[in-house]
Image (cartoon, rainbow, N blue to C red; front, side, top):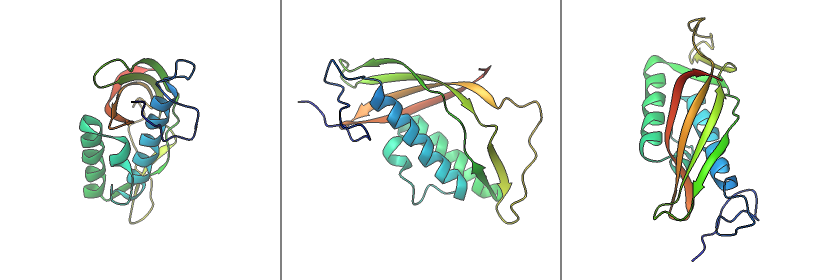
Length: 155
């Protein structure tokens, strides 16, 4: 039975050979990031839809990172710039899976002290534009991000 996609593109359906099977995977990834940015901006997952777009390792990692920000009294302002490229989509698997390679640029995503708004100085030599490997799976009719692996490799 074909699953119905809930994305901004009404024509996107992974069951149709004429549709771009990567489009809903990329949409889920971008929504995952939008919710992650919202969570980082207030150092809380509460009130975000992160759980709708992230599961398994990806959700656990985001939750850990947000809790660490909260414990340190930090929030993030701005947002990263994404350049995702859907590498593969396999809808014939029992659990359909897609993979993305992204060039994630976090140079405009700043950590600030929540109480004062003062920017936190980070090491000058840190990698701010790096390769991220992503695995998405289709759970209960919609794509979720299950693993996000930032690499120590510039892009």
